[in-house]
Image 1: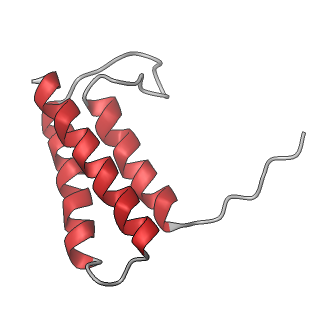
Image 2: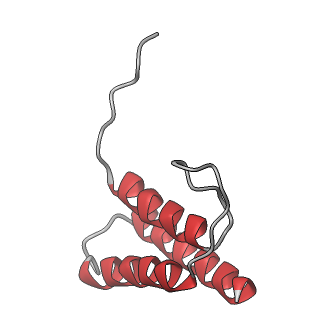
Length: 84
């Protein structure tokens, strides 16, 4: 079976951080243990990383990238409030 070549992209970076946040909120299992684990401090850290990324890339993203990042941040923030 051929493994597709992974190519780094902005959306892959955002998705990676967002997945870590979701996992830390108990929304997805830890891939290493397959167990649901909650660590709200780590979830908050990952959301803050995305907000930092948004700030540091201001006026340097395509409209599509900006919308994607905003949507991911807003979605995670709502889920974080529910997870508390």
